[in-house]
Image 1: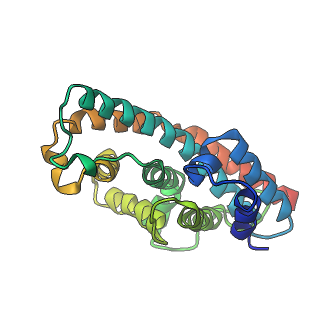
Image 2 (image 1 turned 60 degrees about the vertical axis):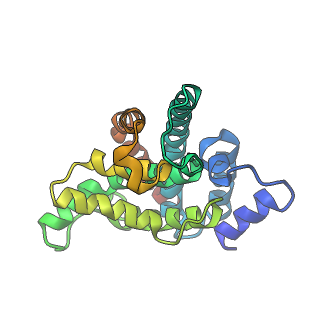
Length: 242
């Protein structure tokens, strides 16, 4: 059975859908248990390794996205309390978990892939040794597969319109920024703020520095070493389980 279809049937056929399905799946312990169950159902499937890594990266992202959303809400609440508008059109200011989740997930996937993208660029796409000690599929290829699987998950479960390839394109935008020597945080901050305040007003909003501070907290605490160790652990765990 298609894993996404199976997950939808398991979660939403008998129960009312949570306010944010993505938040439920990737930012709560209960949701993570359902993801583990899907992996068990597909333990003989060759896609279980990239699926496990996709789930792992998205869970990392879900926790951070929730903290970022809470920080943004606190900031917006303070501005509203003092009647300081963030935008000329108040209704245009919003802070959706799903939209922040896309941005944080893209940053995390970039962090996971950056080392290998850099090597790929340096060696001009020549064959490189990204094999794990088990001799299974190249780790880099599995990471790339996990990015596309995560993109599909977000497209299927988001409560706001997220076109296919949105996550992939966002992750690759950081690769392009790296190649051009641009600042990764500035790129991330711009993506996030454009989700909250209309793009044309970000530079003019009094709240921009305060919202940027919340993005900086997320960026500076995104636990890259822990993420990389987790991805490699999942790769080896599910490779050896086969």
